[in-house]
Structure formats: C-alpha cells, structure tokens
Image 1 (cartoon, one colour):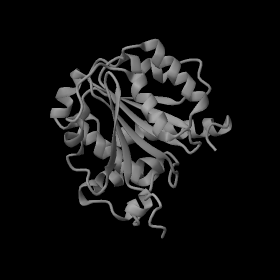
Image 2 (cartoon, helix red, strand yellow):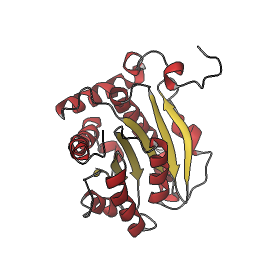
Image 3 (tube, rainbow, N blue to C red):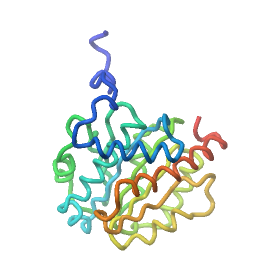
Image 4 (cartoon, one colour):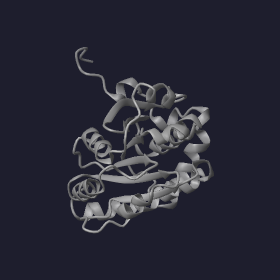
Length: 238
C-alpha cells in the first residue's frame, strides 16, 4: 500500500459493518433489518447521515438521552445501508457544525462528547441541510439524511425553496424527525408542492421514548423506497 495515500473508511474498518455490530446495538440492528426487508429494501445501499437540532429548546432532549438514543437507532440502520459503520454527524442552530462520524467502535456517549463543543443557537434548517448536501458531495449515490428538530425554522420560505431545489438536483432523501409538539412545519414539508420528486417524510416523535424502534424504521423505510423509485425515474439517482 502506498504509505502516502489518504486512508479511507475501508482502511480503518476492513471488517464489514454487519460483521462487527456491538452487543448494545444487536436488537436495534435486527429491528432495522426487519423494517427494510418489509419495505423491499434488503440489499439497498445508501449513504446515511444524522443532522441534529442544537437550538436552546433542545436541551432537555439532550439531557434525557433522547438524542443519543436516536443516534444509536440511526447507526443501527446504517449497518444495513452503508457498509463502513460510520454515520457523519452534524449539528445546526444559528449555523451548522460538522462533528466527524458516529462510529460502531465508539458510539457510546458520542452525543454528550460532541454537542458540548458547540453553543446553543436558533433553528436554521437551511444551514443544517446545506451541511448534509456538502457532505454528500453532490453524488448520484442515494443519500438518506435523518434530520431531527423540535421546532419550526427561522425562515420557512428559505427552507421550502431549498427542499424544492434538492428534490431536483440532489440524490438525498430527508427524513424529518420531530421531537416535541412544535413541529407543525414539518408536516407541510412532507406534503410540499412544486418538487420534482417527493424527497421528504415526517416522522412524528413528539414523545421520543414512546416511538418504538420498529415504528421509527418503518416510517423511514416506506417513503425512502418510494423516493428511490421516483428519483431513479427522473435521473436524480443513478
């Protein structure tokens, strides 16, 4: 191997993710696999990301462990879709902050370790969405972004415009997970008119601990499959 070549995820983790699931994620990984199979997505590949709201109103969800739980659920889902065992993590508030990857080998407490490095902010959806698009690198490989928030955005019109733009230009499906009871705007994004394809879904997690793993995965898998077909038909996914 060329010693000057930049190391890739495959270099860091030569064993496939599905063969090195830690004990703490086994049940979640099984639940994710069942949901994907039911949706006809067994064997589907996609680049999975997690984007988290870091506005001030989110503090109780961080303290209660709800955000860490979501991170673990997303990591388990990625085992089936993205074989490197890594989930790129970003936070957004007044601006977006990219925080490296959630790793199968070091996922315990990852949210506590990372979110304390940044300040609480407002709720700029577009900043978080742009960070995810940049990480996806305008690839035509399918991307699944789990985008969590507990409030409506600073600029609704800008968010709607950006979602429409990514529907036509980016191979990304947005799974908007709404914590709490102030997420009415996410419902409008789910049904937003004027998009080339339906590239978003709303997952109602008003009380995060009451939403089961199966319910979360089913709510993501079904619309993701529909988007894959639609996006392929218009050439967004290749």
